[in-house]
Length: 419
Image (cartoon, rainbow, N blue to C red; front, side):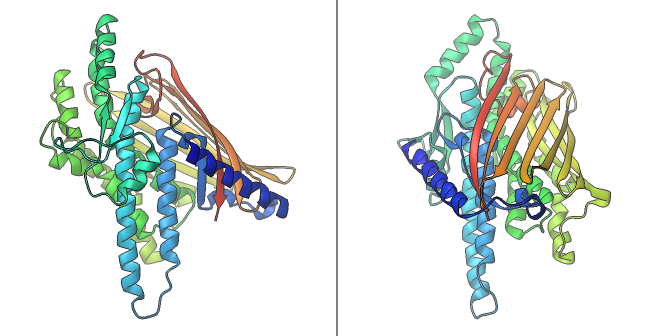
């Protein structure tokens, strides 16, 4: 906590110093300020304030910084190709370690949403002592140099208390939902990171680079690869299938998760964007301004869902966002997503804001607003509001899941460096 606060103070001091030396960018010259790569510090990075989406943003920024580092390696001299290849492989390993960390915190934050404490562990070998760590960033950087398989465990005492709560309150049927939500939290976080990488590529109209592309593929297929190898209790897909069977659902079986991942891969425009960029040296095409759709598979308590994401670039400063998420089969459900990402100027002072509303199984809202305070620094505020009954809420709510009613609300502030 102290380290995080110290880092925040350093960034704030840099921003204030930068503000005194430089004037604010004028709107006419800062149309694309919101499309720059960034390094952020968010209040949602502090222990006790974590949200899945803000932590995924850290992973995305780490990925983008890795690509910028690769761009700095000069070409055209003896050994440059070998150096770039070795650096690329090392950075790929680092980013996959980041995906593992996001996967494990996905389990942890689902437990937290039910009021259960969790611990991130560097080693899941039963014959060795567990090394407890609840700090995402400590665990992230440890994972960069640790080849052992990571794990996340819910506190057994609090888990028992949760079971007693469900029994005593007559909500015993909801206990199975906890098991599914907890077990699916990791794979769903990987899928969300793939979605975020895809959104970033399309929003910034940037060529799809190989590191981003491979990371997108690996995160999108994380569940599919896990499903193929899961053989025992403790493996997420095995647990999820078992939990659905306990609910009397025999339609969710081995292969369900992997089939959904592979279908989504081939139905998504981002899958083909790297090759499009490679042959045309251009970003993925947007016919008449429309973003070609992408599909992402999520695990919900109702079954496997498919989220379709698209949008429309109305102008350089206005992007409309739309899509839907549907579960097919015995417990069919659908949610609609509508939103926008817009930059405006108030007295030549640029402000960028984003809002997304999701409705159908409840009402979810994501809002954020940021403005430059200098040539390189922005500050902003954001909030995430999720209904605990919604498909989105199952993945991202941070409170009230035990009660099964109400909304989860998170407010955060952030400062970011543009480069």
